[in-house]
Image 1 (spheres, one colour):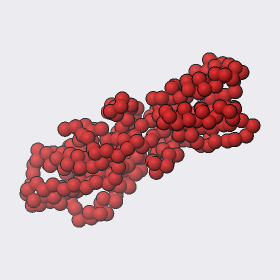
Image 2 (cartoon, rainbow, N blue to C red):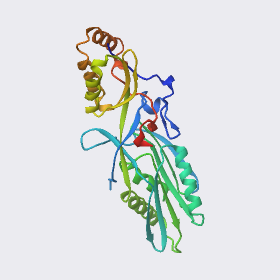
Image 3 (spheres, rainbow, N blue to C red):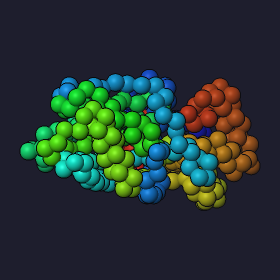
Image 4 (tube, helix red, strand yellow):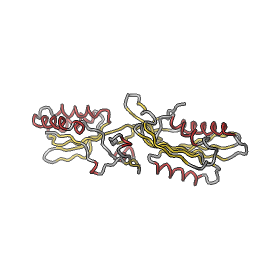
Length: 297
């Protein structure tokens, strides 16, 4: 026989992304696991008081070329510099999956450039379900630095990032319009020169009661879908967990049903379980840490 279940949150799988815990509201009640897919070239659309705010559906989830839901985060720290009337503008972009990481990165930039007149910044944390944004003009006229930087980030496909633009004054005032243009250009150049990691949502399903005679074929079929087999337990029968992209979870469940069709008792129990617990049997997204996948360390 075969049974399928969700992981309970009590097992310690909190939606923790490098220190940032998302609550039910941030996940629309469904915790998700984030996974890296590949590294690609970045693709983008063309006062000291800081401001942090949350927003719902701040940007659409970008669709990957193969039609799967995906979004992008910085693959590594990237810097770029422009000069405007002798003022130096140094943009530095980093992957910051939590507000705490963003604040630490901003503090590090101020240590790195202690003699700079301004270290203006903007950050965006979160995905299409919910995001947190923050910005600061760091002494520049209100609205001339932090907002332009944030607008560039918001107009791109990138999230979980912080962009700090450091300014060394060159002796010539640029005016509010000139500042907006300079900070915007520096942010754009920095983003365009960066590399990004494409990420997708994944879910993990627990499977138990699989006969040894069926396991090899079942495992092969799930791996053919891109599933990652984890935590195998070989006892009286086989139990394991399979980690799949969210878009194919129903297909993975169908494969498990098809592969165990000859086990009348098990199939009946499996179908009964689906009828009693449709959300459970359908493998609703489960809260889990991104670090559970080695390629996402």
